[in-house]
Length: 308
Image (cartoon, rainbow, N blue to C red):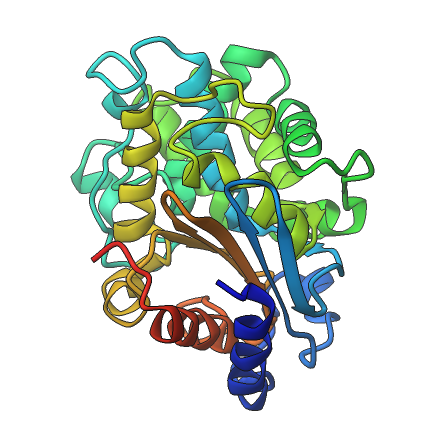
């Protein structure tokens, strides 16, 4: 496979859509990002990396971080795939509601529908905090190791901006705490959640760091982070829940496990082959990158690769 040639063709296809959609404006620090950016990277399972456009420009990972927090919890919590693990506290079903919705929590006794909506991610961050004592820093260290980029860092401005406009996330956390579904104090949980979302990474960094999902749980150094069945389960939840309440449409168009973030990034996995990351800040009404989704759609069309 000539990845570079495919990426060039995908970029030419997607660039006319780059200014479509709206840059996230409910987090002021993200609103200032140029809507003209587009980058895409592919990292194969053997470590080779290819890119096009702004593929080495760092951006705010936002909800893409939820994939890595879930992986770390499953890796560090024995039995995390069973009824006594994280899945006792968070479901695995698509939500059908916006990513920051409170609606389902009351009807479902404080159990979030899946780990990729905000409520579910707060539960996962809470568990990671219990396991590590410092959820956000443990994630940052893991991402530095897996990406091979020791300069990865939190963005203080983004974290402060999220904290200043984080009333909805605080409400979600307090509501779940009232049902006994948080182990740590609410202020600590939401602080670590904001910090993990503020991490800046490039398409290259994310594609490389997510490689363990394409390698069935093996890290970049060959050691095992997850059992193959656990990596399979994360990929499955990414497919059904990773692009918010547009997951069905995304699976129909692209056919890959993926996780998006309102920073404009999307990471996608082709098990046994490679991991992809695309970035374009213009978002659709569901919070997914317009040009990014189109690029991944065209990539799977050109290559014929999907999980179906």
